[in-house]
Length: 58
Image (tube, rainbow, N blue to C red; front, side):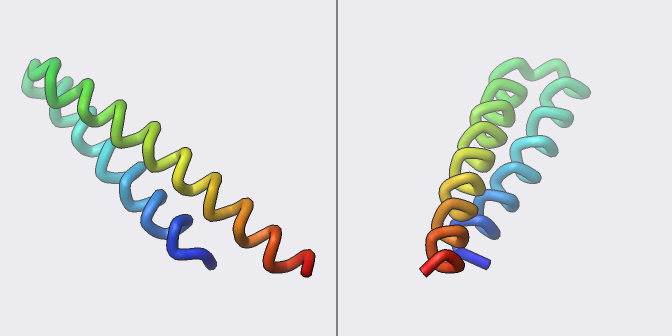
């Protein structure tokens, strides 16, 4: 597993937690940061998946 995949998954989890906490506390800034962290994590995870696929195909 590529390092980007594991790091992206962690960012995605962190973002979900931040977003949920922001909703619970009524903190729109924290909620927005969580959404951005989730998106960043998904992108990084996708990049890691592409790297994994490239390694497997060669």
